[in-house]
Amino acid sequence: MDPAPAISSRAPSLVRRLVLLASVWSLAVLIASAVLLGLLFEQAALRRFDQGLADLTDSLAAAAQPEAGGGLVVRDLGDLRTVRAYSGRYWQVSRVTPGGAPAVLARSRSLWDTELGLPPDLAGRLEARPSGAVSFAAPGPEGQKLRVRATRLVLPGDVGPVIVLAAEDRRPVDADVRGFFVATAAVFGLLALGLIAAVVIQVRLGLRPLFALSQELGDLRVGRAEGLKGGYPRELTPLADQLTALMRHNRDTLERQRAHVGNLAHALKTPLAVLSSAAAREPGPLSGLVVQQAGAMQRQVDHHLRRARAAASAGGPGAGLATPVAEVLDDLVRTLSRLHQDAGVRIDWDAPDDLVFLGEQQDLMEIAGNLLENACKWGGGRVSVRAAAEGGERLVLEIDDAGPGLTPDQRRDALARGARLDESAPGSGLGLSIVNDLARAYGGDLDLGASPLGGLRTRVRLPRAAD
Image (cartoon, rainbow, N blue to C red):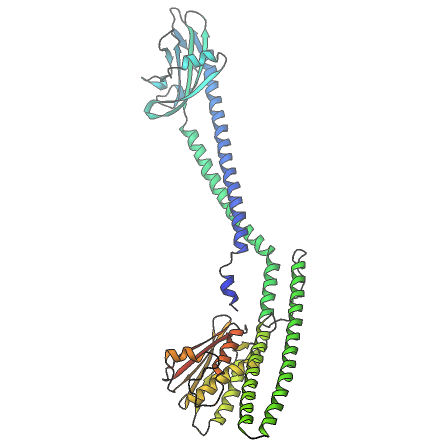
């Protein structure tokens, strides 16, 4: 089985997705609101600006007095800005001449020696709107950006129809609009950060029961718990109930498999033992062959029963047991040291006391025992064993010896079931194959390599129970 973290690391994050969607939507709404507020503020500012120009136009209409001969005199308006040169507030009165350009009759002192430029079609536009006004942009003295309001009036006397212009520099209004946009952007930016933080907190709090369920499932998988605690929100209760039912079903199935494996072991071992005993009582070539083949059958049965038991132990949540590695290695080293004492075999081992194998003790003894037995038999009298944690959910068991070692081709062939590199030695050749099958049943693997001691290094990776 593949390690779960390799799958989960590639999976998309639900929290990230929810936060991203909520953040994008919130930012879109805030940006649209900020732009709309800015446009509304600009329109309101221009309306106030145009109202000031309209008041100036009305004042000019009231203060304009025709003179004999077609002249025009404008009384003092009482507006100092129209008197100060290039102040940014101007007015101008021009006569409408048929077929020609309007002639300037009067202008504010603030224009000094300049005139307000008129669009060529202004007279026609005003004639089409006899009771309205026309606003347009025009350049002013010293490069000012003016907003101009034009109104068509008909004065008594010889003056005739005139165009009254009221203009003012709109740069202060534009500066106010820009300042409003900047302030709005800053306020809405802070609001966006606050909303994003609130969304993150809301999502984390909202998904906390789901995280708790995931943690409980992880504890169940590594053997720290036997079932789900419950107490989930209404939306998660059906999922938790289904998971509980599924785990109960898996547990019952595994128990039935264990019972079936045990029954099968007893059913096969007894006939094989009877067959071997009967053949041993009748010496001869045929009886020797029967004893030999019955022994081989017994080893094959033991091998496949071990595989079935390991698959059942590692096959479901909470099915595995926690086995301290140091205790198993200590027992094996003591036993093998006594067995190989006459051969002068020395075994050095090291394993942390808190290193725990996530599986059955018998399987770990089978794995480590086969590897240690091989090392003691072919290791040249010196064997080194090291067990350590590897990553978050793995442990590694390394066994080095000082024997002749194996070539790369021999290492590959040694893992084949039944392969024997030394046909003169007794055995069925299933040792490394059993270790490899058991390790794979637990989601681990077995590697063969060169040892720093000069012989063979066997490295097996197995699941580790969490701290």
